[in-house]
Image (tube, rainbow, N blue to C red; front, side, top):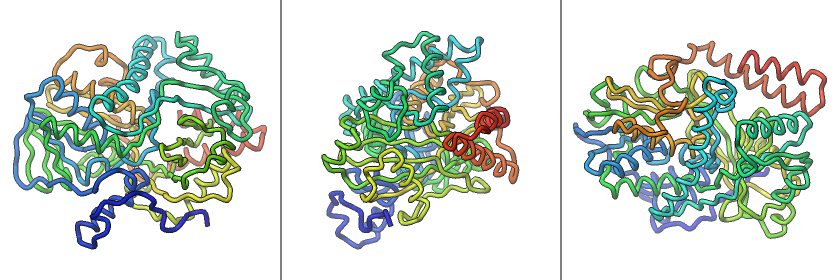
Amino acid sequence: MTYLEDPCSCQMSPIDMQSSPVDEEHRKYRKLSFWHDSVPGALLPRLGLENNIEVDIAIAGAGYTGLWTAYYLKRLQPTLSIAIIESEIAGFGASGRNGGWCSAYLSGMEKALAQPALADAAIRLQRLLFDSVKEVGRVTALESIECHFDQSGQVEAAILPAQLQRVREHVDFMHGLGFGEQDFRWLTSQQLREHINIDGVLGGMFMRHCAAIHPARLVRGLADVVERQGVKIFEQTPVIKLDQQGFTTTGGRVKAGVSVLATEGYTGSIKGLGRKLIPVHSMMIATEPLSELQLEQIGLHRRHVFNNLDHLTTYGQLTADRRIAFGCRGSYLYGSRVRSHFDPADSEFDLVWEALLKFFPTLRGSRYTHAWGGAMGVSRTLSPCVCFNKEKHLGWAGGYFGNGVGASNLAGRTLADLILERDTDRVHTPWVNPERARELDKKLWEIEPVRWFGINSRARLMQLADWAERTHSSAAPLINKALDTVFP
């Protein structure tokens, strides 16, 4: 077995040595992921809502989107009364469990850049996403959020000829739009190995607009910051219903001048929203701390984030304490069920481990100490958006499809601009109020079982495409064409 029993090597607060109900709750949240296990302080919930309240701005969800929105609203207009309603604790969902990539990538961006009518605005959006990575670093430094922010950049590795062609075409495409070597740089196999020694690599790309972070430290630290700004955070208070006047929760009614939905993969828990954003799970492991010899063998001397170009996404980073945190896209569960707790000894994590060993075979014989999963929000367009309806006093953002750490910062700033009616460059980009996804009752996922069948068929076809490329099958181009045609 590759899972190391009794894995926790983190420093525990005095509360960990107790056996009270409070301690049990703390331990429950610690078990969510390596990131939660290694975040400083006790993971105890704030007080829940126990009566009816009225505020200027009510936000459902204490993840990145909700917290960044509150942060910038308070920076722009400190007198606003803001309440954030969270069903568990701040950072319980994807914001606390992700791969720790603060990236300038946005799902669906290539499609927008390739459309002549959208290209100019999409280029501006891409540059705003570049700036958002720096903005996260700026704010975390300003607010003393120690989230291990390290903008060493992203290394994307091609290990198959078909992957090499895709990454070469992507770099050429971005250069053709006016982006330079300082944004997207082609790497030969030798140049890539100077960054990281990925087994069998043929070449790849370096993108500097990406930082490695400790995601739970970021989200928990941001929650503390907005509280100091005067924002009220009510935890363990699920939102049941949304309307034009605010939220109905398990603890009381929240009446608001403006309501913001920032619930990502958990959006389906709110009445009537089960088909707007659906949860797709991603699976991660974290190795034991690596020795100097192991780091030398894999050539990972800086905290680059890294991935290859499989159709089923892989992603990894070197943590500040010299572990590799590594993940793969997981599954969609029938009926949009959300799975929040995972058994680290489950054999499905061995598949993630084997995927990591394909990158670094020299790690065979070592162990992973933490294994977890989590749900990310996916829209029917497979692209995120930022929306605000002034007449309905409602804003929402999400559908990041696993690329929300950097994008959520831009989404929070954009929502603040829209709510306060500020005419900035941010509000004039393709992902803001797209007609087909603006309203919560438009562009919905299909009903079951059509939804389950379609999503899982796409995943199987992606697996088949990866297999065909790895085996150099003559059918690979046909499978890729089918994938692009049936599931664009």
